[in-house]
Image 1 (tube, one colour):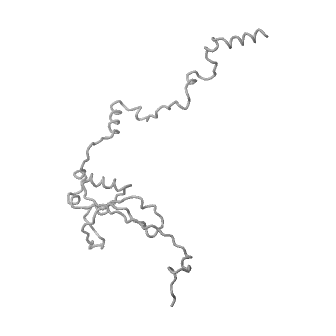
Image 2: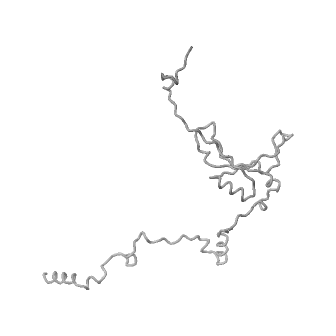
Image 3: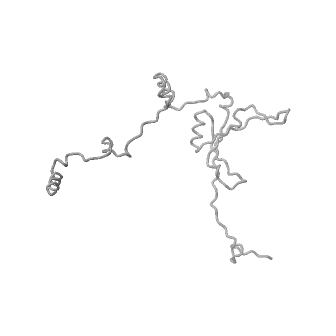
Length: 189
C-alpha cells in the first residue's frame, strides 16, 4: 500500500503528469471556449434556401438601398398639378393643447398643412366642396427640421409658425386673500 501511494505521489510531481491534459467527461471541442462567446447560426428563410441563385441575386438587389448624394426635387414626379405646388405656402406649426382635456399627450409633434384654396357649396346636398387635392393633407413630424426638409425636397414654399412661449407659472395661495398687509388690503367703504 505504501508503495502505491509513494508511486502516485512521485508521478503527480513529475513533469509528465503536468504536460498531459486533464481527464474530462465533456467534449474536448468546447472545453477551451467560453459558452457565452459562442454565436448562434444565422436564421435563414426557407425561401432563401430553396431559391435558385438567380432569384437570390435578384432578391438581394431589391433589398438593397439606393443612396442619392445630392438633394433631389421630387415635385415633377409626385403627380400633383403644377398650380397646386408652385403657388402654395405650407404652414409648419405645433398643434395647441386641446381645451377639453388637461393632458399633453398629442402636442409633442409638429404638423404641416397647406393654405386653403377656393371652396364652394354643393347645391345638391349643401356640403362644402373643393377642387384642391392638398386641402385635407396634414402630415406629422417629430421636429420642425424634418418638416422643413420634407418641404424643400418637394419644392414647397414654407413658413414656420412658432408657438408662443408660456409664461412662468406663479403659484398662488388661498391664504393670501385674507392676509393683512398694505399691498393686499382693500377698503370696503
